[in-house]
Image (tube, rainbow, N blue to C red; front, top):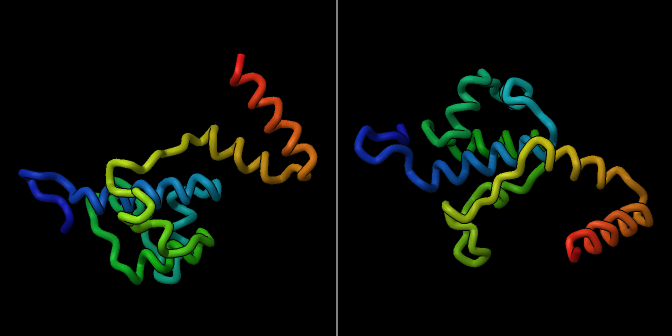
Length: 124
């Protein structure tokens, strides 16, 4: 078990859980759907425990989740090279995930126009 009474979850387990939650949000998928679509299904409560770092995720389970979410396994793992150590993982909200999903669905010329608009608004 990843949690101890004195120290709480291990920072790496928390970071992997955050990335799992972020990846799930990017795919607009519920905890229940992720658990059910895994090769060896788990309950949404178990997915919650994984996302909070309370339970460690076995590499085989992480591979299943990566497959369901269509993300590389490396997405979930911290790396010294890319600076994604446990405390450096930004989370995105559901609103940000939806915005990204809608943005990606637009044709390239509309994406460029919206990006230019955002840049000009940001400079104001």
